[in-house]
Length: 248
Image 1: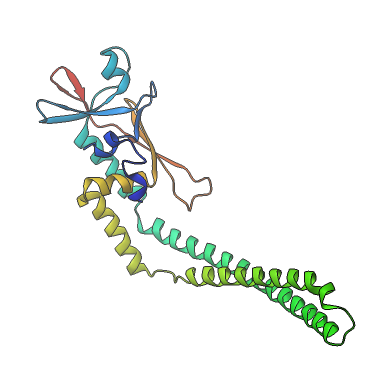
Image 2: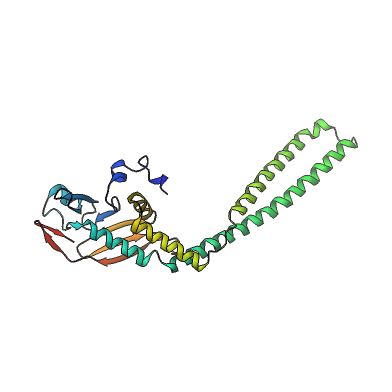
C-alpha cells in the first residue's frame, strides 16, 4: 500500500504535505479541493476551499476549518463506523468464503485437466503401438505426436499454477481475539502512527470527504457491502471566530 503512494505515483507536494487529509477533501459547493494552510507563523492551521483561497471572500459559501478539529472528527468517524470488530469479522468471513469458492473452481479445473491428460496419454500410447507394429510410418505420425506432447506440457504447467494458487489460499478464519487485535492495531495506527502511514492507510479505503456548512460527508469503500460504497454524514463542529475568519 505504501509503495503505491510513493512520490513517483502521487505528486510530491501531496505526499510531503503535513496535512493528514490532503487530496481527499473537497468543497460540497464548488467542487474544488480543500487546501491545507498555516497561519500565525504555523501556530494555527486550517483547510480552505481552493476557490475561496484563490478568489477571496464571497467567492464560495465554504468556510475555514480548523485542521486539528477537522482531522480529529474524521478519524473518530472512521473508528466509530468503519474500524469495528463487526466489520472486520464479516470481512474475514467474506474473504474465506471467496477463497473456498475459488478453491472449488480450481478443483473442478484440475479434474478436467486430469481427464484430458489421461486422454492424451491413451492417444499417445496408441500412436506408439502403431509405430512399433509397423502399421503406420513414424514420419507420418511425428506432427501429431508433437502436437499432443505440446498440449500435455501446457496442461502440466496449468496444473502447477492451480496447485500453487490453492496452496496460497489455505487461510484459516481468524478467531475473535485475533480480530480484536487487528481492530486495535488499526486504530493505533490512526492515533499514533507516522503521518505518512496514517495518510496511506486512510487513502486505502476513504474515497472522498466532501464538506459543507452543515455536514461532512465521508465516502469510503468497504468490500463486504453489496454496492461497495457507503456514505456517513456528521454535523460540523461549532463555529469559532478567529482573526476575522471562521474556524470550525
